[in-house]
Image 1 (tube, one colour):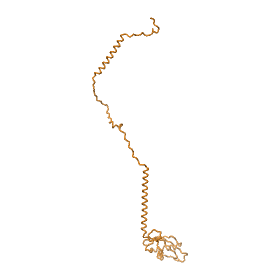
Image 2 (spheres, helix red, strand yellow; image 1 turned 30 degrees about the vertical axis):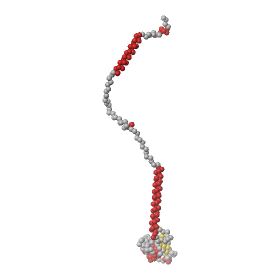
Image 3 (cartoon, helix red, strand yellow; image 1 turned 90 degrees about the horizontal axis):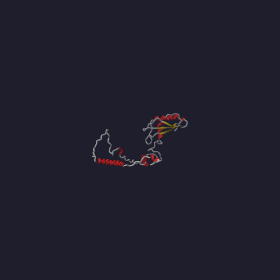
Image 4 (cartoon, helix red, strand yellow; image 1 turned 120 degrees about the horizontal axis):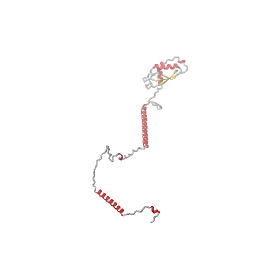
Length: 234
């Protein structure tokens, strides 16, 4: 038999013999027996139960109950802040209170004025002034028209002035006079308007000071401060 060049280099074909088949069947049988024996051994094994006590090397603190654990605590319910009254209401209230106080003050002032008027009218019920008088006092403070004559009549004897006839013109001096409740002349006297003749002015002042007390007016009282006008040649 002649082989081609390609066939001469190919491996020879191996045939399947009876020995190989028997070896395969025996291997499979052993495998099935081993599996069967293992299953039976596990089903017949006695189950033993045991307990063990565990020990920790270091003390460990137990965790808090589930509901008291900080991470599981319920969040606080937010409270609603109190609602503040609008500012406009507050301002209106202040304005009303201010207006009320002003009205009360005005009423008090009017009442005070009314009471003062009543007191003044009651006090003037006994006034002695003339109907055309514009004064507010119970009686006139000015002396009567005849009082100046009474004063001059009492002061004249105490005036020393010589050679009045030789003086040109009629020098006139005006002197402010005050008297105490008992009629005593209160010093110092004050010249309101000089006459231009110093000798005459000085003579009148000295005469009043020397008189010391003045007479009463027609109503039996001493007048309030008054002005005495005195002419040299009257």
